[in-house]
Length: 548
Image 1 (spheres, rainbow, N blue to C red):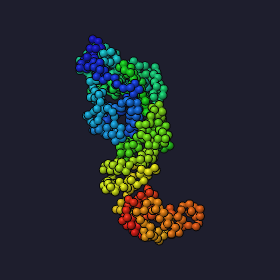
Image 2: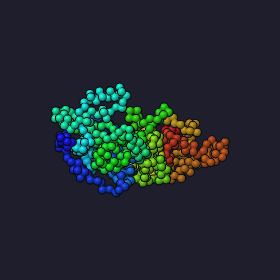
Image 3: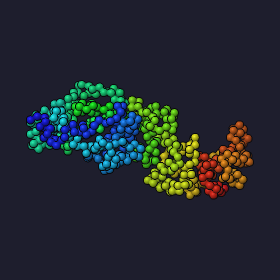
Image 4: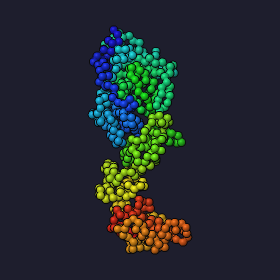
């Protein structure tokens, strides 16, 4: 009996690997095109760190005319959650990061290199496992869980490195005949790689982000096919990345220690290895130190958090681009209105240590992003968000014509308003524009410098009687506010007041603040003239008369 007899006994129906090499030909792309993938397990929510990897992987593929695909690694089916694949796909869709190929829902996919779900590729993995068995590069292992546990205890007691290697690899030296007999006897088994590595030898590797790294060779005889016939992650990913034409594996740096094993697998399978780029995690400050952004501790670690808060997808993606390359911020300043597609992301300029998470920065970026939206875009985004998260805002937006007028205030100008950082801010930002909401407020407002009630009454009465006319253009309106200030003994220009402050009780700005607070309940708002044009005559008179 020889290795081929053993391979045929274990995988009698497996096709020759040439079948799959022909079925999945080399991609017809430009030689500099990069092919990347996102390969999550459907085991729960998508982490912000995973979204970060997607942004980077998709960007480098797009900018080189390459391909970005989604592969679902579901071979560990005990950990899989219901609708896990749908959750992943929806999260990518929510952030405008739809892949070129891969799963599009729980069962459907697009692309010529599928199936893109590992549990459906069992025959492919078995074909390559059979190929390794035929060459004596793999072998069946009959050690039970109890055997392995006992072995581990002995290694720990002797303070020896744990694992299945060297003299501890009990089934490695079984003859082919012995192995065949055990299989025929019905003994359960798995398939292991017969590692040619030695721990006392080093491999040197260049990681695109981390630079030159050095590891001991892998000498562990890892499991490649489990008892259920499915592969382990390590084995499956090597075959998939080869057949799907992955050129660059962009992943979290928790995988850096696996590089020695993964390169060994590519070598033993006689595949060209992809280039590796290991991304440092997003960090968070805590108690004077730093730690990884945590699924358990940090609500903002889940990408669903940003959807629930109503932070636009464009802001989150821009923030992640910001931490990906240090030169992005200066590029954005020089190109404030350019598409992200115009920025060239460089993997070798990514931080070797983890970027610090900064929600203030995200919200600051979000304010700028929203400020560039048209009123219609703000309305559509806010309305869709409110349908799921805020019935009060939804009610305000139901009168679309009036809502669009409100959202048009100070929008489309050279310096547009930047008072909204997320859709969950919007209800508070516009509530005073609705009479029902305005009159719910306690009218004991803070007026700033002018706070004498009789003086406020005189300012408002004089304005309504002599100066109020909604037909005025903006300059005429403001000139009338200056006239009102002058009539009541205030400086009609701020600079006049600054030159001789002892001469006046205040200036035109203080008068306009009285008008602003009386009409909105707030000292800080967008342009008051535009607000008044939207409120209309009846609402303005009703509000001022209530204050009087």
